[in-house]
Image (tube, rainbow, N blue to C red; front, side, top):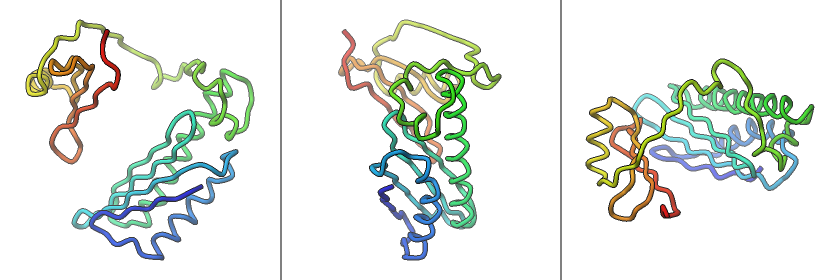
Amino acid sequence: MKYQIIGKNIKITEGISSALQEKLAKMDKYFQSEDVDCRVVASSHGETAKLEVTIFLPQMPLRAEVVHEDLYAAMDLAIDKLQGQMRKVKTRMDRSNGKMSLGQAFFSDEFEEEHPAKDEEDVVVRAKSYYLTPMSIEEAVTRMEALGHDFFVYLDKEDDRISVVYIRRDGGYGVIQAENEVR
């Protein structure tokens, strides 16, 4: 893996960097390619440390975010989360494509054709469709808050792009916009 380790409100020492790389290197055996990028963002917020680890794979990124009092404990928890995600993907791929190694599961071209498992947590329990009304970001935030939701999908009236406004964990709002225009 190729590592990019970034510190926000914290200095990334050689000890922190080597500990992260050592722990993440244990996951190298799961990947068929050496060209896997890994970005780690470590930040300090008062008495707590936050660690965000993203592994960029061809079919999907793996991501874990952990907040803990101890940065080194956060590393262990993040690795556990990533390994859990990897096991879940492998299990799904095994169900749809027969037995394959974890590396094959992540680099498989058939990943998109996966049939989801029928686990209770994976079943779509509700599908909804509605007409996207053109509106401003401010209007979308107002509707989202009125509905009591964490996000709201709308059509941006300024550029006719499908957009999602959401409440950020660290406060404030975020907007995700589709790059392609609605036709």
